[in-house]
Length: 511
Image (cartoon, rainbow, N blue to C red):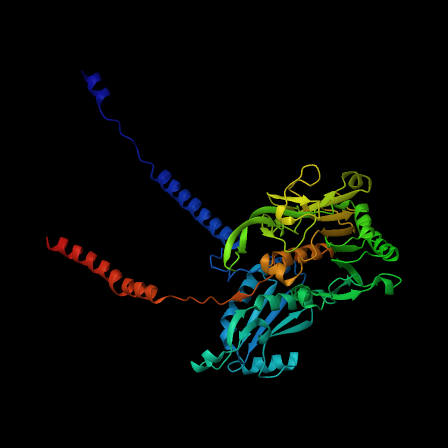
C-alpha cells in the first residue's frame, strides 16, 4: 500500500528561472536583429509605383537610364524670381531625379527674396540677372541654364477667356523633364553627335514640316542633323556618326553606292527607310549584300474601318487596309525593350523585308527583327491591280507574319561582355515612319522606335528608352445632370447614411 501510494503521488518539477530568462533574452535579441535587418533592407532596396493617370510622378525610362549612368555628380539649382506656379512641379521633379540617380544628382532651391546672400553668390558665379527664372545644371565645372519658358507650353487666352476676365496666358503642359534631360544630355556629352541625311533623290529635308517632330527629337537627344549630297563630296565627312537614307524616290548612283559601302566597311552606321513606290535597284542590291531582301510588295490586309457613304456620312466599311498593322518584337536589345508588344498601324505604303539566311552565315552578319506584321496582313505582289478587290494569292503573295524592320550588325562577337566596334544598319520598309501624321497615328511609337534605333547605331545603349513626354493638364467637364447627381450624393445621401447609422446606434443603446 505504501509503495502504491508513493507511486501515485504527483511529481514535483523544478523551475529553472535562469534557463527561462535566457530563452526570453535570446528571443528578444533574435526579434530585434530581424527588425533591424528588415529596416536596413527596406531603406536600401525598395520599390515605388506611380498610379497617376498619365504617370505624372514617374520619370521616363530614358531619363532614368541617363541618371544611372552619370559618371560624375550633377548639381542643380532652382532660381525662380517669377513663374512660381511651376515651382512645386519642378521641385517634385527634382526629387525624382535625385532618387533615380542614387545620390549622383542633387538639387537646391534658392528663393532670391529670402536668401539674398546665396542668390548674389550664384549670380556672381554663373553670371545671370536677379530677375531670372532658371534652373542651373552644373557638371564637371561646366554649367547650362534651363529657362522657365522652356519647361512649359502656354496657351494664350482666346476671346471668350478674355471676356471672362482671363488675361494671362494659361499653362497648358509641363515639359520640365523634356527640357532638363535634354540639357543634361548636352552637358554630359559635350559635343553633339553629327548625323547626315542623304539628299538629292527626292528625300524630305530635315527642315521640312513633315520631319519637324523628328528634328526636334534629335535636338533633344544632342544629335545634330544636316543634309549631305553624296554627288558633291569625294568622301563621307569625318564627323559623320551615321547616315540616314529616308525614302529616296530615285536610285543612288554607282558612285554614291561606293561611298556608302566604304562608310559601312569602316564600321559605319546607316539608317535606311525605304520608299515602296520607288524603284531603287542599286540600293536594293547593296541591302541584299547585307542580308536584307526588300520583297517589292505592299503589306495590306482586309478588315473593317471607318469610311463615308454616298451622302458623306461616316459608316463602318469593310475593305482593304493599306496601313500595315505591326507589333514591336523582342529584339533582345534595348532598342525595343520598352516598346515590346506594342501594336499600331504604319501610315502609308509598307513593303516587307526578308532575311537572306545564306548571306547571314557567309558574311558573318547578325540580323535582328524589330517589327512584324500582325495577323490578317500579307505582302501583295501585284501592284497594278485594284486594291479594293485585293485578296491573298498563295502562288504569288507573301504570307504573313512579315518582317517590316530589321537591324544588322557586322563584326560583333557573341559575348556581351566584350565591347567590339561593329558596322550597324537599320532598315525599315516604310518611308513615312518619321512624319507628323504617322506619329499621330502611332501615338509617338514611330519616333520612339526611330530614336532608339539611332541611339543603337551611335553606341548609346545607356540612352535607349522611352523619352519624356509633356505632362498635360486634364480638364474635367461635367454636365448639369452629373453635377446634380454629385450634389445630391454629397449633401444628402452620404450624410443620410451617417445619420442612419447614428440612429441605429442610439436606438441600441436606449434598448
